[in-house]
Length: 320
Ligand SMILES: [Zn+2]
Ligand SMILES: [Zn+2]
Image (tube, rainbow, N blue to C red):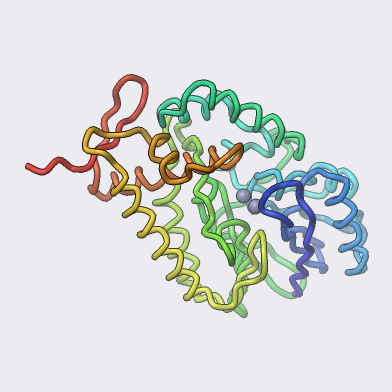
């Protein structure tokens, strides 16, 4: 069972996205690339080189529902004459290219993001949304943790690895400990735990960083020899990367705590201090990162949080 990576261009800052073809029965594509002509052309070219026609594809599996990964899912499915589309049920907050504005707005207000900034972020969502088609709930099947995707000559185990998004999934070939990890594992950058509503209770915020740490530990338990990420080159030394991520997360947490004034601050203020030069999409990612680290520090009893005046104010633990 051969896993064939295909690199596709994206209009996003992150650069090209990796999708993965398994060219045996049932022919399966893991992620599809964004809905652009350039990505669609590159996908067709990649499939042609692997001697596969789009019409051969029977199964489209999504690591998560960000536009750069799921954008072409509908058009591939239609061209493949109703291939099955599979995604984890917790990808609700990003439901296949449809962002839940109202739920996000509430989370951004609570993080202390000013109204004009929220408006800018909303326009940015609108801009990103064109790169993916939406799906209705009855148009896809659910990826279930621990279930297996079977192929002619092997299987991939589905491992739910929330963090980057609530419904992010990885796929493990246990025979040789190869993992396809979407944006859960990226070689050159620490993946962003993106601010998301909790899939079970959308009025709450998803504990993205705490979940992410558990997901990383879970992937580590497979002792991966090779990890195919959603962007960049494959990772051959997962253990080294795992330790690097942990150090980066601890360092960032220490920085966030250091930046907290005694009088307290909202996540937005900390984000602006951490990333003063951030513009457009990066302001959203910056506030996501600040919230994620503040939430984790709070859950570990290292800082206090108080809900007042529509936003949450974080404080260092007061010395008694
Ligand atoms: Zn992503
Ligand atoms: Zn991505």
